[in-house]
Image 1: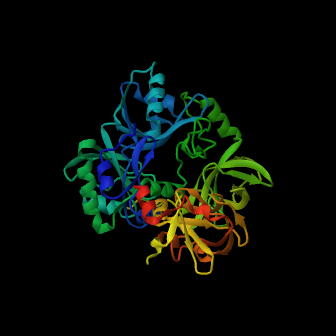
Image 2: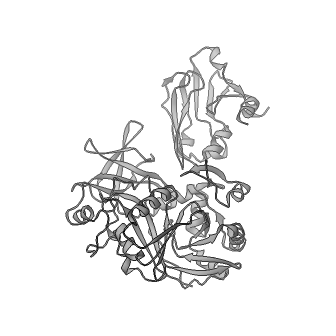
Image 3: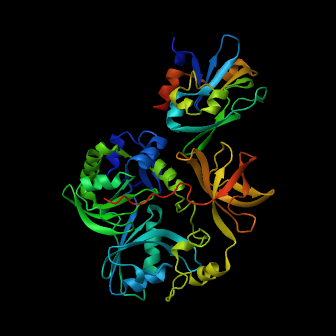
Amino acid sequence: MTKETFLHDKHVQLGARMVDFAGWHMPVQYTSIIEEHKTVRENVGLFDVSHMGEVFVSGKDSLEFLNKIVPQDISKLHYEKAVYCQLTNKKGGLIDDLIIYKTGLTEYLIICNASRIDEDVNWMVRNAKDFDVKIDNRSHNYSLLAIQGPKAAELMKKMGINTEQNSFSIRPGTAAGIKLLVSRTGYTGEDGFELLVENEFSEELFDKILEEGAAFGIKPIGLGARDTLRLEAALHLYGNDLDENTTPVEAGLSWSIPKEKATDYNGKEVITSQLKNDVEKQLVGLVMQDKNIARHGYDVYFNGDKIGVITSGGISPVLNANIALAYVKNIEEICTGAIVQVMIREKLHDAKIVKRPFVQKHNIVKI
Amino acid sequence: MSITEKILCSKTHEYILENSDNTFTIGLTDYAVEQLGDIVFLELPEVGVEFKKNETFATVESVKAASEIYMPVSGKITEVNDAVVESPETLNEDSYEAGWLVKIEKTGDESELNDLMEYEDYKEELE
């Protein structure tokens, strides 16, 4: 059965086109994906991302437990701070990518992908046997609203939220009399906030944000623009760019992994070896050299040989070009600046390997 | 007489319109372009190429996905709308006049029109 967020009827009422995404009936667009994309890049947009998972981890051994299940060093994570992590299997493959927040001395909040909640929780429970830890999946209790764009901070401030908050941090807050957890994170490459709210207050909060945001040009944004925004920022989408047969090192996520971590974690052997000795496949960014659009699943060629596959592809409204993420063989000639080819409807089209992200991430607005 | 009173539509959302010079114009219905959302790419065939009824003759891409466009009848391409290839967003604004795709000479017989619908019936079928 398809699930609905608490804001489902609101989306329909706003005229959204609804689609099935990861088992959820979600808005893909309200007016136009390109228009919504530009709204987030230029002003501010409001997303309902309540389908995402919220898992609370607590207990005496919560730190040791988390250190066992992700390559990151959670002992370095301070109170009210957040860190981008990966849940890895024993072979170093990605079960999910997620953000871990430290919300108490031995309390953590994990926000994970909607499509992976069950896998993640099952995996955590299986790994929790030797630890004094409580894993509490409360995804069904919470709604999550993302406010993203250069005017997000101004809007949040107007709504009474303390905006003196750094990127990747979380704090309790109140807006319109509603208690929230305010996180300065997002999935767009813009400054932004994610507000965790109990379901029963989500509609009131959503309405209030649209009302207060009108002065800043706010619009509700669907999953269509969420996808084009994250692609410009070269942020991975689980299921497209990440899966259980891909390691964080192959996925270009080495920057997020400490080279030396004292404690053992799932997949440490593979990941440590890959960090030292390199990998066979690598994630690269591509810009098409003509008007053709590379899509998920299209093959990539170099000198007539198949060298990889597109995992995400589409348009970049900001660059007015077509961009893609691809996994290709990790050999010397296939580097930034090299021209490869993408097979589109039985014809090869040139694409240039470029540095990621495609569009520079914007710093947080300090007000 | 409005244009939608003169066209026939296929189940796969193409329309065909008879012109005064014996050629036929083929395009996408307003319903099709609305469903696609922002159209960002269009690939049309070369003049002179022949296609059978129901064969793929073009590709349209929205932000989200690529879709094939099928011949509502068999025919030979006589003219291609280069302007719409250059500015595919034209299709979202008007898929009947500025946003037509190709003109053809029909090569099949009249029975090929049998499964095409009047615009009113096509709209009804969608509901």
